[in-house]
Image (tube, rainbow, N blue to C red; front, side, top):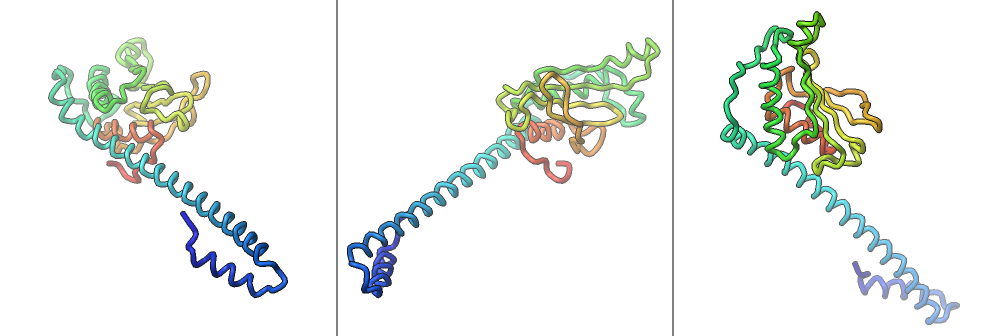
Length: 218
């Protein structure tokens, strides 16, 4: 950005009122003042450009999330082989079998994979075997992503991301710590214990990329 020519003339005219200064000295002072002004304007232009680029990048990330995972519904339903497992019951949650839980979790994983966010690891607890051993438990799973995954924001999740699910707590997430433990779990906000797989995958993609979750369930 350049300084308007009339500004230079006004500054010189103002200094002309001081008859004690030679004109050459006054011209030099004006040039110094204008150099400072122009440097400040250039710095502001650079900062505005940086902010515009940051906003644009965030907008593109949001659009990529919505485009990939919205289209995943048709891709997954058209490509996947129908599963024999029955639809998970809504109530009571604790009667859900491992096969039913796996069918539901596989649906979520299919949508994540179609959106380019396939988990590094998926650990599904075999609640049927534990129940046979006399241990009271409910279906649960833990999904993790390494920090080097291209859709995981390394600044937000420097050691990776963990997403946990159970029929008691629903969907929760936390950043992993160095060493494998995790930060405090937070609610993913899927509108229920058995959130729609596409909705779950979309909200996980927001978290993975370091984006703020919408206020309400999508």
